[in-house]
Image (cartoon, helix red, strand yellow):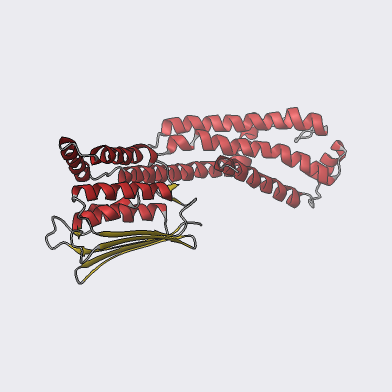
Length: 347
């Protein structure tokens, strides 16, 4: 079932439960009003309560959703009391009108009696009584409107923050790679077209294919491989990095652009030109978990703090995308920097 049907279905189920509870509670009632109404309608207690309760619930539904649509949106977030007052007036008008139509144009022809047994109540009492029996539904509709607005604002904030975090492509990598490709082109190297194609693929994925909430892990790995190949190009193939992937990645989905900051952090802060101490980047899919381990020697002279904004970016995205479903650790010991991630994918 598509997600857009979940909320309407939930509303239907709630109102069905409200009606069922109303019928269940009203059937045992035996008073003069109910006895006269049943006698005039000619229906058994069950059918009388079922028909009358269903019709009256229409009034409560109108009170609930008009308050939800006409009062709440004007009260939040800017507290526009003038428009909210107009919304309240429209809500009351709709509720009173609906009750009048239900009682005099639906129940009376259907059950052959009216709610007042031939007496016409004063208009002021009628309106007051409509408010009295419907005010709790108006309040609930208003509270739901406020809650939905709060949820929507939080979702928009999270999406905006995620979009910002994903957009942080390292400009130094971009400029350096362009310079390296320019040098290859100047030398008429056969590697230039392939390097340009890899850079084009990286930019395309970052700008277009990396926008959904989830992306195939295989595409993320291809993106990561192209990035490392371009880094080897800049390092004149003197990039010592033990990179491995274990497990079946077919069908696995993960948040896009989540892996690249680990490689960027190693390139920016780690020692990758020492064949005696290569860096390690291991990825593993096992039992519904995605695991990443990155280990590299720490460069002695750092331009900025180890870890940098890239890993802070990753940590924040993990908190937003995989709350209570991930473990993220960063340690530094004896000149080695170790970063690990464990994400529970299927939940």
